[in-house]
Image 1 (cartoon, helix red, strand yellow):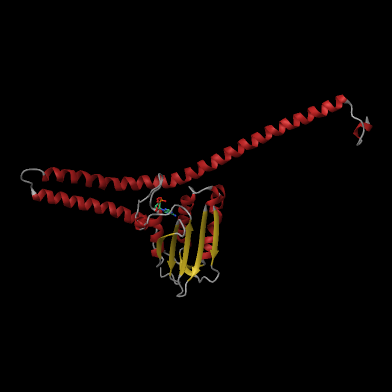
Image 2 (tube, protein in one colour; image 1 turned 45 degrees about the horizontal axis):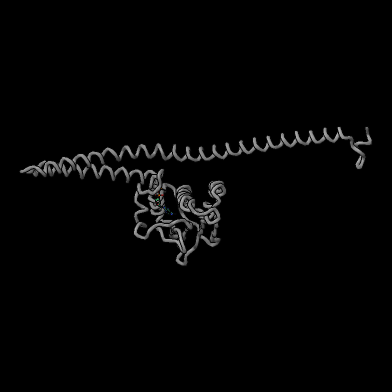
Amino acid sequence: PLASFLPGAPISHGELERKAKELEDANEALLVQIAERQRIEDTLKKKQADLDHAARLSTMGVFAASIAHEINQPLTAVASTAEICKRWLAEPAPEIGRICSAFNRIEREANRASEVVRRVRSIVAKRPAETLPLSLNAAIEDVLPLIRNGLKRQRISLRTELDSRLPTVMGDRIQLQQLFLNLVTNAMEAVAGNPEHGREIGVSTKAGPGGEISLSVRDNGPGVAAGDLQKLFEPFSSTKPEGMGLGLSICRSIAEAHGGTLSAHPGFPAGMVFVTTFSQRGEA
Ligand code: ADP
C-alpha cells in the first residue's frame, strides 16, 4: 500500500524482514564486488611488475648475452693460455720462445676483449651526429612522466629544482635524456631499501658563473664507500644481481661526447650525488 512508502508510516514485520534480506544480499554482492576488484587490482599490479621486469630483461638480457659471449671467448683463451704457460714454465728447461708467443696470444686476446667493451661503449654513446640547441630543463621535464609511475609505486619522493636561467646547450636530446634516466633509475634502486617514508631523490640543474651547466641527481640511499667511487664507472662493474654495470660507463661516455664530465660524490648526510657538467656551447 501507498502508506507504507511514506516516511514515518508503519512497516509490517514481513516487509522489514524482506528489506533486511535485500540489504544483506546487496551487502554480500558488494563484498563480492570489492573482493573481485581487489583481485583484479592485484593481478594488474603483478602484471605491471612482470612487464617491467620482462621489458628490462628482454632488452638488457639480449644485449647482455651477446656481449657476454663476445667477451667470454677471448677471456677463456686468456685463461687457458695462461694455464699452459704455467705448465711450460714448470718444466726443467722452459722453452722461452714458445712461452713468449703464448704471452703474445694472451695480450692479443685481452686486447680483443677490451675492444669489445670499447665498441659497446661507442655503439651506445656515439658522438652526437647532429647536435641541436636544446633546453636541458625541457629535455628533463619531457621524460619525467616516464618515471612517475615507478616513483609512486615505490613511494619515492622526487624534488626537482630546475634553474630557469639555464642557457641553451648544444647536444643530442635523446642521449642526454638517456643519461638522466640512467642516473634516476640508479637513484631509485639505491633508495629502494630505505623505509617507506624515507625514500628521496633530488634532481637539479644549475647555471654556473662561467656559463657551464650542471645537472645533479642525488639520493639518500646507502651510498658508496669512498674507495669504490671510481670503480662505479668501469664497464661491467655492478653490485646488482641483474645489473649489467654499463649504465654509468655509458652516462660518462655521453657526458664526454658533449664536452662534459660526470662524477660521483658522497651525498650529505647520506647517499650519493652524481653531477654532470657541460660547457655552455656543448663542444660536441
Ligand atoms: P648497474 O645499475 O647495471 O649495476 P651502473 O653502471 O649504472 O650499472 O652502476 C654500477 C654500480 O654503481 C651499481 O651496481 C651500484 O653498485 C653503483 N651505483 C650506481 N648508482 C648508485 C647510487 N645512486 N647509489 C649507490 N650505488 C650506486
